[in-house]
Image (cartoon, rainbow, N blue to C red; front, side, top):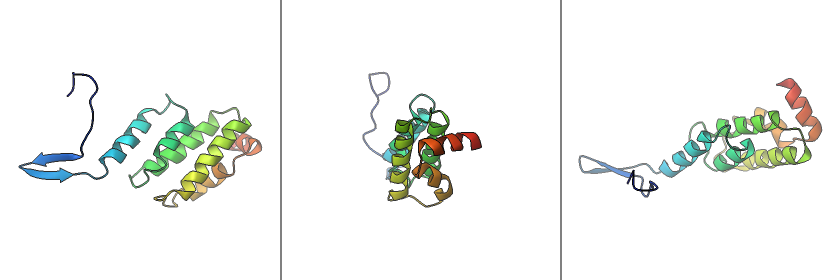
Length: 124
């Protein structure tokens, strides 16, 4: 209950006129909403990692790719930043529900290096 400590979602079921309505994607939608709420308050690579297995939710793929782009734009192009972005981008490309719509945006991220980071930042 609200006002009595932490609220918890324990079920995706609601009833309307005695009929049970179930949203099988509710937990995924809440995870994506939570990740989106962290935009600018959490490392962008972490935002992308939080949603990379929720691509069946519309808009999640764009959120993940945009987070990786922001991670590069805000980085110092150090090797760790480039490696983190590269690894998450490669995970996205292999994700079960990845549609392929973002291939053009992911290609440079999936091969990110220090030098490519500098070039990416100059281009954006």
